[in-house]
Each structure stands twice: as C-alpha cells, then as structure tokens.
Image 1 (cartoon, rainbow, N blue to C red):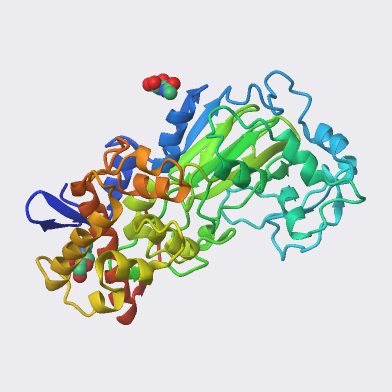
Image 2: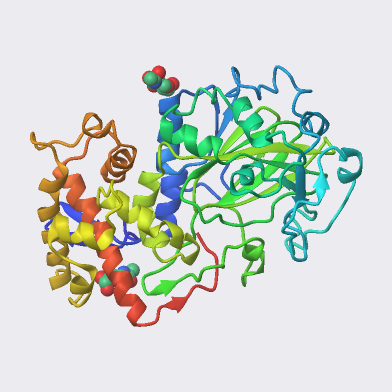
Length: 441
Ligand SMILES: *[C@@H]1O[C@H](CO)[C@@H](O)[C@H](O)[C@H]1NC(C)=O
Ligand SMILES: *[C@@H]1O[C@H](CO)[C@@H](O)[C@H](O)[C@H]1NC(C)=O
C-alpha cells in the first residue's frame, strides 16, 4: 500500500487521490506481472460478465461471441472478407487514414474498386518499428448521419448497415442506450499487410468494440499514463501517432492478436494501435462504440490521472455527472450547490493537505450529499436506478465493491475522493502545473 496516495480520513475511510504504477498493474493484472499484459480471452461470455469488464475498463477478448449475428464469420468466413464487403457495398466511398501526411477530408475511394485499392500502399510514417508502417482504409459509414458523402447513389448504406447489425451480439446489453450508440457508430477498417491505425487515444467517453471479420490483426493498447499531483498532460499528447514521438516513446501495456470471429473490448481513454500481421492480404474489422454499461468504475479509480489528462477533457463533465447523479444535465456547479451547498471556487480557497480545512469541507459536502441520493428507505440499489441509464452509471461509479448497492461509507469515500481531486486540480491550475514529458504507466 506504500505507494498509494491516501489521505487518512478518520481511520477507516481514506481519500483516493492518485494511482501509482504498482496500483495500476494490480488493478489490471497480477502483482508482479510484466508489461505488456495479454487480455483475458473468454469463450462465449454472458452479458453480466462482459458488463463487469466494461464497467471496470478492463480489455477482454471475446471468442465465439458473434453467433446469432450477421457477422458470424466462424460459420461463414467468406461473407465479410474485404472482397465480400466491397461486393456488398459497391457504392461505398472511403479514404486512407493514418497516412504520413495530412489526411483527406473527402472520401475519394470507391469500395467497388477493391482490386486497385487493396493493392495501394501508403506509408504511415510511424517511427516505432513495431508500429503499423502502412496506412489502412477507413469507411466511416456512421458519418452518413452527419451528411458526409459515404456512398454514391440513393441507397442509404447506413440504414442497410444498421439492419445488419441487429440483433446485437448476445454479450451486449440490449438497452435503448446501447441500440442508439451502437447503431450510430459503425465503421469499417481495411488493412493491407503491415497496415493499421497508429497509436492514439479517442476523445469519446464510450467503450469500443472491434470485431475481426477476416485475417488477423495485432492490437497494442495502453491504459491512461501516470500523472502526478501538480502535473498535467496537454491535450494532443495522445493524438494520432503522437505517443511514438514523446521523449522515451510509447510502450503498450497490452498486446494481443485477434483472429477472425474474435472481438476486443477497448475501454475509453485507452491508447490503441492495430496492425495486420497476416497471413491475409486484407484484414477487415467492424468497429463501433457502446454506451451500456459506462466504464464508471474505471472512471472513478483513474480519476486522479484522467482529470489531469488533457486528451480526456471531453469527458470531465460526463464523469462529474456520474459522481453527482446529474441525470438531467444540470451541470457540476448547480449539482454541487444543490447537493452540498458548496462550490469548487469556495473549496479551492481552502488550504489542502492531510487533516486540512479542505479535507474537512470535502467530507462535510459528502455527508450533506448522501441524503439527496438515497431513496426513502435510505438505500441505493440497482432497483432504484433501473429506469434511468445515467443513474445506473452513477450507481456503478460509487459502487466500490461492485455488489450492485451503494452504502453511505462507499459514497463518502468515492464522492469525497472525486471532489477532492476536482478541487486540487483547480488549485494546481492556478499554480501552472508541470507538463507531462514521458509516458509511463
Ligand atoms: C454469467 O457467467 C458467470 C461466469 O460464468 C456466472 O457466474 C454467472 O452466473 C452468469 N450470469 C448469468 C446471468 O447467467
Ligand atoms: C497531492 O496533493 C495533496 C494536496 O496538496 C497532498 O496532500 C498529497 O500528499 C499529494 N500527493 C502527492 C503524491 O504528492
């Protein structure tokens, strides 16, 4: 426990204000394991086991999980090869992504010209010799919703794709939140030999699932880097291909090769990279985001890192909404005022440190907030939140022992840890935080 950055709070409880390297390794793997880890590879897991991985933000490979869907390539391997996809969607239009130079905004390549494009090679410019050296093709069919030109002619290929995506794989919650997110985010990736996506972190807060449709792809991932108190990782540090360029480079915390029919869960805020490692000349994948369940336990545990990670900035509000049960989008300031009659501005003027006025004020805020989140019987269970997707995430955020119920002790610990980090970051901003220079885990 020595490296935990705890502030001791009245003996039993403690604030969780940092995640050391050892602790991160313990969270994801086994003590003493060496990096990179291999994710668990599970055979036909059920929705509740999958949900537990998703909530905790732990990558997992699902084998034989696509039976009963249109993408059961173990049964029908010829249906979703690059050639077959091109034949199915001849009017589709796509582009190369992760090239060495500037990417193109329009979609100049016709899927039907598969003979030509599948033999087109363009360098990725990645410096890391292990990284994909060539650029993949990207058909972001989801963008059809925003009016992007992703097909020729009248036939709506996004609509067609949405039909094909149902029913969803059995291991996914078939909730409305998921239907909406999944059917709103499909994209295809086609990678020639040695081609793939350069290491990068996406800005969205949802988890990603990638299905290997043919061939094999090696994935390398990493969880959010260690960022100490008083430091800040500027936005863009983990942008497309940037992790390779950081002083000292990037080393993955996970590495795994997917075969056709396997799916990989990529948690939010994870740097990820892919590469076709053969033997097929073209390795296609279907990738989409899902919403349910949110990676709430992961957001809670890694909040001290994520709150100081600029590339995660689009999700700070979302995490605050989970921490404050903000199902109606009132916003952080309004919720803090309503739940605890306080504000970040007020709290950040207090002196920090162990047994400080700030610590007392934060604990006081948690004490005031608790009665606002429980039902009339003084309980907070899955039953209480079952009709509200945001509140389910809030429950998961505060459910330290993952038993589906939040106790006052859990809430006090999680809410005050979250709030304390929010305040410390406000204070650090005023002092000009140190920029993060190395990516370590
Ligand atoms: C899901 O699988 C796990 C592990 O095999 C098992 O313990 C659990 O009871 C299953 N849950 C349901 C709802 O079937
Ligand atoms: C982080 O900051 C808080 C408040 O200033 C302090 O109590 C704590 O010891 C710091 N942790 C580390 C690891 O520096």
